Image (cartoon, rainbow, N blue to C red; front, side, top):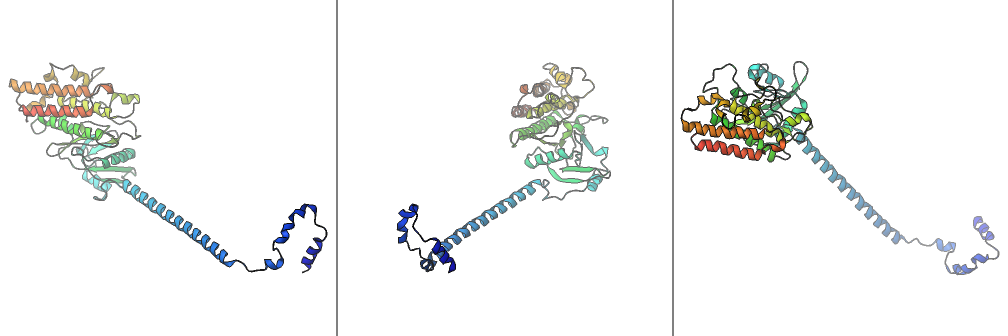
Length: 385
């Protein structure tokens, strides 16, 4: 109480002028006794309840948001991990390096079907580039077509030299590669080791159908990038299936093989579907002339494209692959006219696809339609073999 007394003494004396207009304060009940009165408990509880309810709602909302985020994150991770799984891993176990080595007799040359930019093609397919392996695996995930070879399983291992080894194992094609049928090195040509005109037409149709599918029915479009006879494999019924794919958005360096790769690629142009069309044109010319684009006869400015173009329209018989005539008698004038007409259209199509300037090349959908028409016309006029 001494404190209050001191305060009271300090407040004694006349009221300063500045406070004279505040005489109404005497009307307020500010006495010490009033300050000791009852606390308004009901209002405090009401405010506290409201605050707790609001806080609880915010906490609940935060928990819901956190749970949604967690579920979404796990779902995304699951999708990502599923996408990264090797194709058909759920259906087939990965094959070991030892199994591949045994199955190819130590990767013997006898089982070699062909070589590409990044590796060798055996009956059990081997790829030597990690980037190529990944790109091809991703592309193969997206394709489903009767004329594209099916992948069975994969191998990711270390070979006996301690080097990284990756392989895609494809469906076995009993008749090997088209290259083996076009360029027999030692065997004497017979009916059993050569292709008829009708068979070549069927293979050309299948190849173009597959390429048209890759270019126009896949999103994003897929560029083959290494179309050539050793990458076209033949089943028991001589139906063809192509392999070695690359996504058009890939950052891998330019792919292709000498003689088949589009000329604009050597100038640094980006990979496009028209590059495949060029390779297709060279392939067609090779299939029906029997001449490899790297043949020693092609020197200077002379290449397979020019060699074929100079034969039109009157020298078709001079450039046609003669092994075709083992399957078809050509002495009859009517038969010769049908064959000459067919070959003339095929060679012309091959030339139009392999023009040096991309914009001058026939679009794949038009080329495929023309090839169907050529094959069907030959069949309907009696050229069934």
